[in-house]
Length: 430
Image: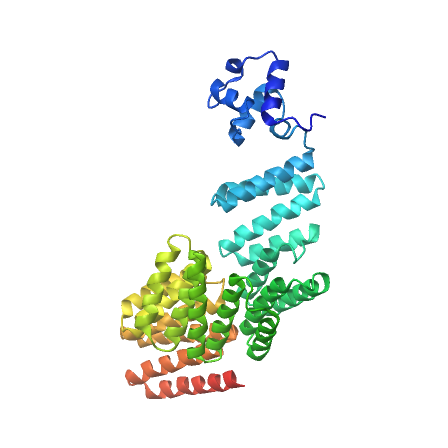
């Protein structure tokens, strides 16, 4: 009924049916002139205006806009979409409160699809705050209600996998991504881009688990499968992954070459956030090669690009590399300050980041002559790096620790630590 009726026609019809003039229908914020323009087809009403006019006319905003009433489930879906929009526009606080209410309502009404959708958004919010365990729990609840397809919500599966890795559950991340690859290959064999995306995620999880050979094989498959004229964002992800893996294998020149390719492509996309992350990646490679000055230049670019948008993990990684570059430049207090900030951001959330931060703290304390404090920080940092399968970084930290002890005249302790460095280097090469 009245399917061809415009919003303006519908507004005029409802107004006349109620015996109202345009002046009588007007409300604060919606003038009679504004109503006249809507009815004449010269203006589309805002969401706020729709709500005010609908209330005065005694109909729902959905009926005024669409000409048909929505059932309760459809209305709930619309409210979830509004909350998701608020989240994308940066109003996470209001979005989270609304989504929690909607999740409870949907569960109570037996509306599994909308309950799952709200729960997924809550999981994404939790992960953005660095609350990885809460994110995993939210995604688990959502999947139990209505599991999305990896073909449609790769953002959800990518976030879940990263959350697993952040908590040291790398095998769970590996199995998740392998299942996604299998599902995409089976249901959409021609979707090369999505399969490549999941292979990149899998390579990250495998390298986090210390299986660098398998990670390298997965990336070679992705490169062989992915044509050169593909989406530039996919090329960026591939170069990024190759850079990260090369550095973990100790091939710093190759790592930096891949990182610079990613940065060049990102500059063309004007994606400031990911460009900032790429500069942090380049700084990590440079710091690992002992080039603190160039690393600092990369980090200053990253800070400018991040602005105030760096989330928990990004801010922590930025602080770690700032601490490492300060230590390489002999700036003990600065290294300690950045390292303590990184520890505050990463403690209990991401062992690899915290491990790097504690080793940087050790370097900062050593530069200030506190060898006992340095040793305590290095001890904890190396243990966290080993737990995270970052054996090369743990070996490098032990070498720096041993050098600091030797400079302080503590030869016996230095030899023990340097022996650990050698053992870790051998494990890395295996």
